[in-house]
Image (cartoon, rainbow, N blue to C red; front, side, top):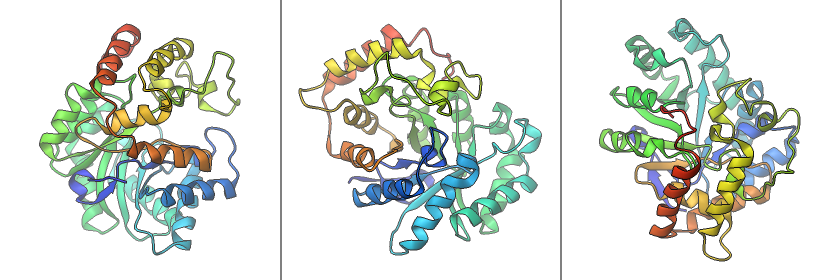
Length: 327
């Protein structure tokens, strides 16, 4: 497994990490034993970066990771969590008092005194430009509650605002073969500033797994069912904001670009890894098999210039006009 520097944290992490939203049961119920097995399979496959959040299962994801790492103290795993979605989404709630409460809760859930990396969890846009917010985060570093901080964003302008701040270590942003906007300005700015890029939703909520058809159905408590129109949270989080059936057409064309025998999901992840400036990509996994398959994308290597050109043709044909201009 290749390792890269995670921005201003100075840590090196595996190019394929593990997103653990699904371990909080926000994609349908997950058996605790299966959740632990997914973490084990990921680590055995060379993954040493976990991404979670305090709202994933109301702390369940963090607790699962914390218990796993306490059982395996020999592991050197970097854990990034997120905070900020436990209150009404107004800028006034992003203050030091709340930060301390949220960080203390995450430290308890994860069983650690100091959190490796804490990211603001897609807060209201003005938060990214508020110096008092960054001062509060710096205070948490000075107090030893967190080692580093970053942001998770919905929009490219939010990413650029955070990158301009001197102590922002990382930016987490949706980046996949159907969401190319970050390539224009965000990745170049991050490279120049030494900020790490954590690529989230790399399979477009599973679209780029290549396993879905127009007859695929998702559980009622799966966000791919209840949030297709953005009724629960930003529509960009579900299928990268594209219509499901139109997305399936694009997946078919993407798969036709691949060498025979190359799994669609691994190719999609390998494409993200190949983008200059990406530190790690964080696909989720609900099974041991998925965790291992995702990790194997690190060994896929470059699939050639033809794939990159094909990805851009598909994006222009299906998505450029339909996605939000600031995504």
